[in-house]
Image 1 (cartoon, rainbow, N blue to C red):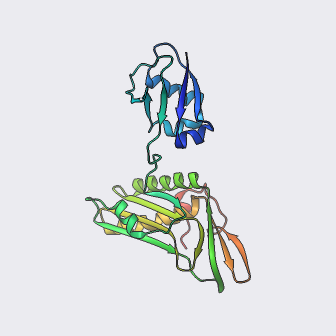
Image 2: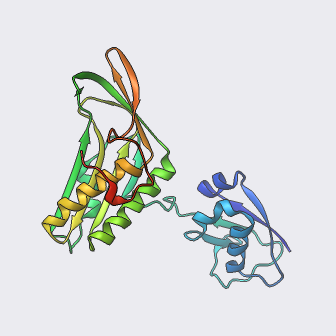
Image 3: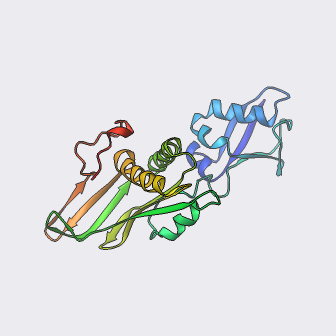
Length: 235
């Protein structure tokens, strides 16, 4: 049977349309519908695991039967399913906000790194910086860093936010906060996280000077985001 399915928010953007058509066997369930959507529309796969299905304007369970003529909708989480610990944003950043995101009863230490726009670099006066990012990939790479941190320092919780757009001198460009059971791990994990951010997160900055401008990378030598974590050079 042919089923029309309504999409909303991020799902509609991924599919490029508000309604999709699915081919399902007679007696199919909501679970079958989700599997069919993932198979027939692969672009939706990344979000389907956190979505709910409504059948005739009622939330449905995985074993709910689907019938021809039912009004079906796939509903993404209201928040978009994003983890608030990781973000690319045009809004001003707050270290306090990230500290709250990682603080927990098991943490004996919380450390926040705040990266700001400095006025002079190698003797050249900066007027402002402009940041650009490949946003969805940048967030996924931040999550990857959090996984690496947790593996190396068990019990560590990480949050990272990076601002994009034009930033004036002294404005905050990036905040990384870690919460760990013990003090030493907080310093080690915090340094690791920010160096990995420079290495693998697709963010670029344009330095705008009094007499010109130039796009800059991480300034740690040749950029190689496929390098292993142990190849990170500190600066």
